[in-house]
Image 1 (cartoon, rainbow, N blue to C red):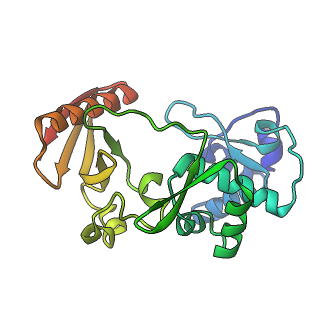
Image 2 (cartoon, one colour):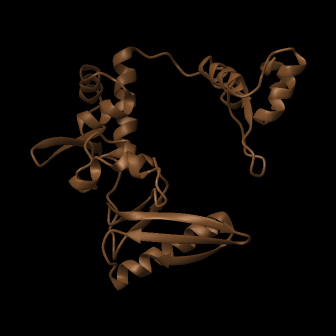
Length: 242
């Protein structure tokens, strides 16, 4: 049913697909619909389609990703996964890679061992870290600020977070994601507070709650980050630091 409805790059929202399912006498309300869609994704039938305005759509996986890839052996696959993880998340540890991927420590080691020369090893606080050797380290001038959403990869893709989260705050990291200021303020690579937004017509009000008073340079960098976020939403940003 889903395949017929989406055939021919016919991108549909979940609500639209539910109507097709009900016409075929398939119960598709509430959690039933969610389970149907998840099962279809796990079976490789459907995937995410392009956004239509504010709405997410579904598409046929065979139409969105028609090219077939070569079948590789297990060690090769583990090496490729390790390379891709450390290219996007490095420097990181073996524990980080195993945490993110769900692999056992043994398989994670196999992937790392099979990945060189793509990966470069270094040591920090007596622990081995890896990163992709072909990713340059950018030169940074002045404070670097990011307004990250809760559950962002930067904070949840690592088992060891002491490099960017104070030990006293690490244990409560997930719990604080549900709070009023659950989004993450990152300054110079470290968790430095929280923030939240409120949409008001053509204005997005951004409230930032830093853990410590900001320096003038940091305030300027936070304002720049808020402006970038407003541009992303195509709205004017109004910043307040609380």
